[in-house]
Structure formats: C-alpha cells, structure tokens
Amino acid sequence: MTVLESVVWWTTAVLVVYYLAYNVLYILLVARAGRAITSELAWPATLTRDLTFANPLSPGVSVLVPAHNEEVGILAAVTALLDLRYPTVEIVVVDDGSSDRTAQILTDAFEMTDIDLTTDDRVEQEGATFATLRSRSHPGLVLVRKASVGRRSDAINAALRVATQELVCMIDADSLLESDALLHVVQPFIDDDRVVAAGGIVLPSNGSRVHRGRIVSTRIPRSVVVRTQVLEYLRAFLVGRSGWSSMNGLLIISGAFGLFRREVVVELGGLDPTSLAEDADLVVGIHRMMRDRGEDFRVVFQPEPVCWTEAPATLDILAKQRKRWSQGLGELLWKYRKMIGNPRYRTLGVLTLPYFVLFEFIGPFIEVAGLAIVVTGFVSGALPWQMAAMYAGASVLLAALGSLAAVLVEEVSFSRYPRRRDVLSLVTTALLEPFWFHFLHSWWRAVGMVRALRGAESGWGVMTRAGHAEE
Image 1 (cartoon, one colour):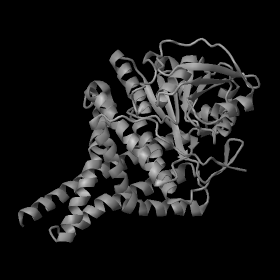
Image 2 (cartoon, rainbow, N blue to C red):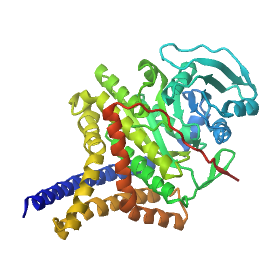
Image 3 (tube, rainbow, N blue to C red):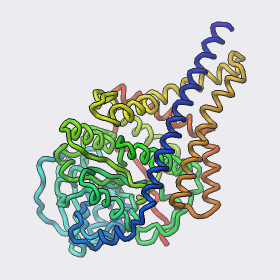
C-alpha cells in the first residue's frame, strides 16, 4: 500500500472500532432499559396512584413554567396544568420579557390581579421582576413578569424564588402533561426518601390532536424532520435515560419535564444562569453536592408519564436548537471536568461522563472527519470496497438496528402510537435516518462544540410555534 492508502485504511479501521464500541454500549443500554421498564410495569400502579391522589399528605408540587413569546400555546398549556390530577398543585408562570401577548392572554383568561409574595433570596435572579399576579378564578395560579436576560434558567430561578411547595416541577411553556403525569413522577419520592430528582419521557406533539390542553389522539407527524425527532426522543429518553437511571448515573433530566426536591435545588442556589445546558447542569450539580456530602441519594427516570412538546418543524430551527444543545453540553463537560473518571462520583464519574466525552463531545468531530476521509478514499480508489462496506455496516446498519430496538421497546411496553401505519412510519424512518440525518446532525453538533471551545455566547434562540391542532 502507498502511504495514502495506509493512512486511509487505518483511519477507517479505527472508525469501525469506534462505531462498534458505541453501538455495543448502546445495545447494553437497551438491555438495561428494557429490564428496568419491564420491572416497572410488572407492578400494578393504578391503585398506588389513586391512593396518592386521595392522600392530603402527598407532597405538594409547584409547577414552574418559563415563558418567552409563547402566545400561541400558553393558554392550552396552562389549562392542561390546571386540570392535572394531583391533590396539591401550584402553578408559577414566568413571563420572561415577552414581546408578544403571552402575559395579556393569561391575565384576561384567568383574572390575574397584582399581589405581593415573599421571595427566597437564596436563589439569585438577574432580570428584575416588575409584577407578580395571582388568578382570582384559580388561586393556585401565579404569574411573574420580569425583564429577560436571554436565559431560560433565570426565568426558572424567578419562579423558584416564589414557589412554596416541597417539590418543584420544571416544564416548558409549550409542554402538555398527561393528566396523571405528576402522580407517576411523584411516586418515586413517596416510595424512597433518597430520591431527589425524577424525570419523565418527552415526546413531540406535532401531528397529534389536542382538546382543552390534552392530547386526545397521537399521530406520527407527516414531516420527515419531525418524524426523525420522534425517533430521537425514543432513543434518548426511553432507552438512554432509562438505562442510565437504572445505574443511578443519569446525567440529564429534560428541562421540559423534571421534578426536584425544592430544598435541594435551593441549596445549589437555583439554576446556573450562565449555563446553556441548565437542565443537565442542575442534575450534575446535585450529583456532585450529594457525593461531596457523602449522602445517599437517587436520581431516577420514569418511562411512563409523558410530556408532549412541540418539536422544531424545519431544518433551520432544528439546526439552531441542536447547535445550542451541543454547545451547552461542551460547556457542561468543561465545568465538571474534575468529575470525569473520578470514582468518588460513582457511576456518573466513571461511566456516564466518560461516555459523553467520548461519544458526544469527541464523537461529532470523529464522524464528520471520518466520513470525509472514507468517501474521499473510496472515490479515489485508496480505500478497498471491503473496508468501506465494514464502515457502512458499523456506522449505518448498527445505528438503524439501535433505532429499531428503541421502537420495539416503545411498542412492546407502551404502544403510544397504536396505529399500524404509525409504527411502519417509525420503522421506515429508522432505516432511512442514518443515510441523511445522522451525519447532518453530527455537523451541527460539531459546530456547537466548536462554539463551546471558543467560549461563544448564546441565548434562548428563536423557536417558532405553530400551536396544537384543537378538536
């Protein structure tokens, strides 16, 4: 072989090993997730949830809702929250400097009037609060109006400062919770006092039908962009987070639906207003604080309660979102770099964080550069077709099989998409995704990581909402 052929051959061999390692680890996560979900579903929980609902001593929940220009969906979201099946619920909506009618819609719909509330000064807030209102028709509904500093975390902190309940549930303004969602996600706190945080599954609501803030029929969206995100969410939540949770190594609880002991979050000072990955930052911060104290604790994931959220409908908006997410992850890994590989932090330190460094931080660069080298080598004749086929099998075939495994776990365990055509649509998407979206997504992630390395500034970004189709 020439020097060029040797370099291309060995580079491809390293890529094959890399992809094999990634997909083998993913399959192990699938196995852990399947086992955890099977164990969870083996116990009939309906009676338990009914007892929790009927028990006045069940811990109260403050639902924290940051809202920035959410006039399209805010009324449906708050209406759904007011109808949640749970004994004690407080809803704190924070209008974070919206330039649209978000605050006015809530004020008109729920008869909001100005009030004075005691605030918890242990939690810092940058943007000044200029109004606090309570609903006369629904006393458990509070609206905080504040100046925006461009960070969702500051809005959450503003809500946290006035929240009064033992548990706080952080969601997005466009989130639609199922009526029993809180009963599901609160149960681990009741069953085990070591639990300090719990997350539920998040799925795109695009294409589904809504009535009074509730999903009444689920549909796989027609848009291939959104369909691909449904598949991503199933992989990330149902498989990834279930698997890491089973080892108490969960790194992320989605900001779209997470429940925490309020006092633990307050002891951390609230969310870090400088972090783009404020949801993961909070969870990793809790791990570090509890391990440093030597306290026994658990951070768990509940695969059954669903939070439905509107996913980006165009590649342009999706690209901006993923670049921001990737930048946030890069900043997070740097912030907590001393925990990486540190056995003091148990599973998170020796397994989860190294996994994210190898496959989420370094991975995008390897995938983008690797694809360019393999394609160039194959086209120029420097790479034998056998090695190119091995690369394709490791990167494309195994990725498709991993996605199909996630679909299988969903359909066997929950069957949230009961129509046969929807299942076939997910299967088709799983088979096609590696050929177009996978490497496009790797490019976006690489751009985000470069931004993190450069220390570039970024904010919420713009997410155009189409709203939900009401029945």
